[in-house]
Length: 354
Ligand SMILES: C[S@@+](CC[C@H](N)C(=O)[O-])C[C@H]1O[C@@H](n2cnc3c(N)ncnc32)[C@H](O)[C@@H]1O
Image (cartoon, rainbow, N blue to C red; front, side, top):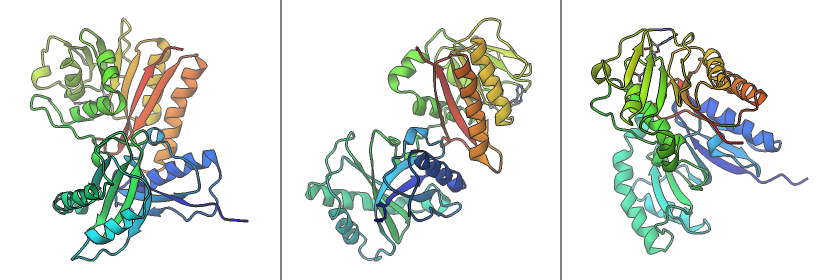
């Protein structure tokens, strides 16, 4: 029997989460078809990326929690000559079919990877000019992107991504700047979640002035700040103190209560929750809020255990799905380990019409 063809995928992830990233991708593939004859995934702990070999299974970027970027890997060059890196890379690209809409030069999101940024910045215009002259690069953000990924200075992986099935950001990182007035760096987590999970029209529709929100585990107030700056009223629940501009803010009511016991008097539009608790406990709480009809939309954080992270997430998110399905509630739920997430992932859950 002929061996099925192998397709290699290059996935970027947070450093330290390579195992989880590969495990999740392989599981998604196996749910479509058994993987036959493909080599084991190449995992280097702490590298910030993994390579998985599949047959013809397709990976869906949106459903992969730990994958920052999804790239189909075409060529790898293990040793690039130091004097001329350009020629072998151009030769490898010449063997690929079609043209490309964008060129992204990337390196792992690790301390070693950061040292490569000066090199990639200098190399980018050289490669770009050469590819333009060959007519291989057209400025079209909707067509296939070409990724030139340098795991280190002497090797390169060449791949492509489909703009409809990948992150629309270099290195898969939707960067945020720290607003000077925000009381904590966590504010960037909610800002990123809003950018990643909602398109522009959804942001305008779902985050409107005059809406009401509850923030569980709100102190010192980074998430609350993101909401009030959009004109949303917030009930901030936390035994800890709110800081800076959020002390006595006209749109904020601070309640020193236990977030697991708090129930709103009236339904609100939004629930956001960043309490440091077991994912099983937080997911139960979120399920309760939706079943009780206390909110329409939620963004919440699930802190990950040290081990069996994929299993813990499966159980937490599966629990919410089972609960909402049993109640006949229609919803959309997306989970991602965002750039500003550490040992945690962020989830967006919204009620949808039938
Ligand atoms: C990671 S911090 C939240 C940071 C916040 N999102 C921000 O942007 O500034 C977690 C907060 O959850 C609060 N917390 C933990 N357990 C809680 C509970 N049962 N009820 C209310 N707050 C809780 C802690 O007091 C702490 O302030």
